[in-house]
Length: 118
Image (cartoon, rainbow, N blue to C red):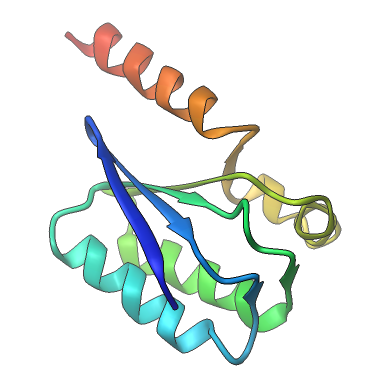
């Protein structure tokens, strides 16, 4: 699975390049995110703008990555397409993950958090 990676302050913004997060991509997805986290990314914003389809394997991969990162690191999501948003709501994953409406909202919120910690 391919990612476009951009560093925005403390946030590592990962844009998924594939159209599907399913059984065919789940293992590559998990390995890719884990490698990025292991290389020092403490706050990953996963941009799912291009994901048109996600199955239970994709959801399982997201949960696995979240658990791998632990409580000391952040994994947040943005850019849910309508179909994927339905999956998140039906499975209540929107209550498990912090989901932002857009990248700009997530970046602004992170900047505000950094400013309030100073």
